[in-house]
Length: 298
Image (cartoon, rainbow, N blue to C red; front, side, top):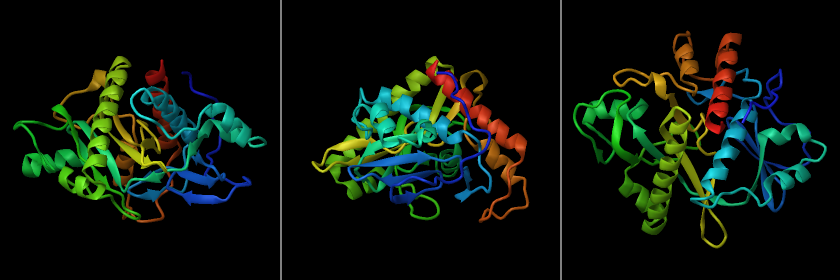
């Protein structure tokens, strides 16, 4: 898939829609259309749980297109929240607001589960820090001698709670089972591992390593589980170029890590408001997201 036309200015908030605003997250805004929800991805960029004062033009479009492409692959494994005949239904809902179509999803109304389903195939980030302390990640004991960026023997499920504010809290599989109930926990666990393995295999064909990712699930009125939110985007996943992978160091990535690295070098205390991102950081972020879309969907 080629990069769609991107706007020159970042869309920081959605205005003019004749629908009630249901929720406003760090990046996405959710509108209530009665039977369904409309999710619109803005171009806002957050880091360290703070939304930056300027965004990345077209980021919301790129994220949405990546997510929609993965939902198409994922539906062979697990039901998704997209309404039937998605593009046709979305186009009808956004008549008069066609510019929002590339950054929008029309989805079923579902009840989100209170946990995030995180799957790790490689050692990185907070998982690597915990491994250095304990030789394990939560209740997963890992082999000795692993380094930053090492491939794990098998993908592991490391769920977390959802925090309304601040950071999510990583929890053990046992705690996750207690929160969800054993039956739902087992379905979430198995679906998450299967979805990760599908994503990792497809990404590998594109020369990309899917190091880790998070999934979210919701329940329908009949109690059935559905894959929701976004799926396998650079905002919810850690992607590395396979050609540069080298365990023992931090890996170049297709996510916001270089933005975080730049922020770490600034005189900023990681509370709002954040510093304005320089033009070169904005351009590099846009280029990485576009490259990720093109490689994955080629």
